[in-house]
Length: 169
Image 1 (cartoon, rainbow, N blue to C red):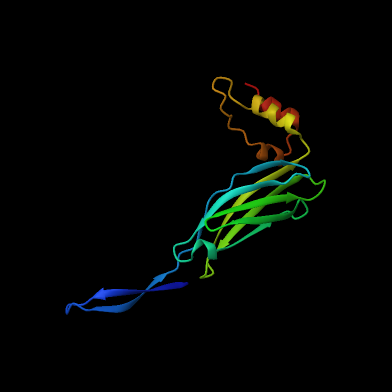
Image 2 (cartoon, one colour):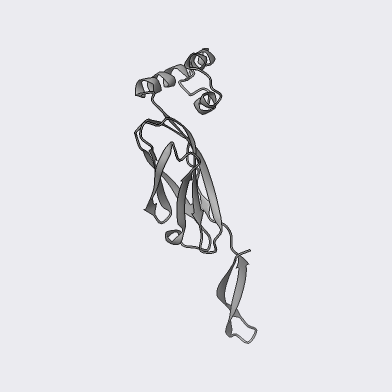
């Protein structure tokens, strides 16, 4: 366990103040959620904004890193921003399609870390299909999205016809 120490002044019965060291356990940093993303082949995704914080380490001193579980698909991802507000830009490899889990990690001065995963789907489907999915997969009564996960359908190997059929009212 990592510990943090603080110097405090405590009042004594004789009216004087004496320095005392208080030792507390270091808590891991925090990182906000990052939404799953759907992108097109050869097109960067982002920058996607997220926040980092820590009770003991100033946000400017937190180390943020990124990795992919599918480096064939996601050739590169870049961290940007500063302080509490950071960004990640996902850069797909040329002419590759598929699914990857991107992990963004934040580490504090005590070497404790927190991670946030998000899914990235890279497809050849153009924006016309995206507009079509918004129309087909939304509830006609109120225009709100239906509870359908394209990511799960793609991972399950369903065809486009299965997608349309499952979305029909």
